[in-house]
Image 1 (tube, rainbow, N blue to C red):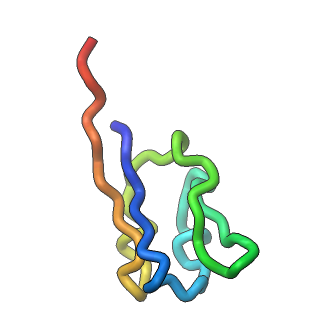
Image 2 (tube, helix red, strand yellow):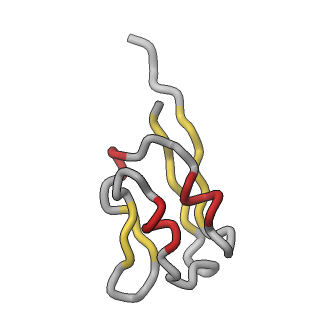
Length: 68
């Protein structure tokens, strides 16, 4: 299952909790101190980042892959 990550930059305070809990290292903190997606294709849509974000700044939407 693929996913689409949405980050509300105005809400993100750069605490790094989402980065720490991501099992696939999809997220990182950028040079401005905000979260960014660095390996979007590696996301397994586990939702750890969304569940643990204290500021409700990140959302994981599961996207079904098209059948061949």
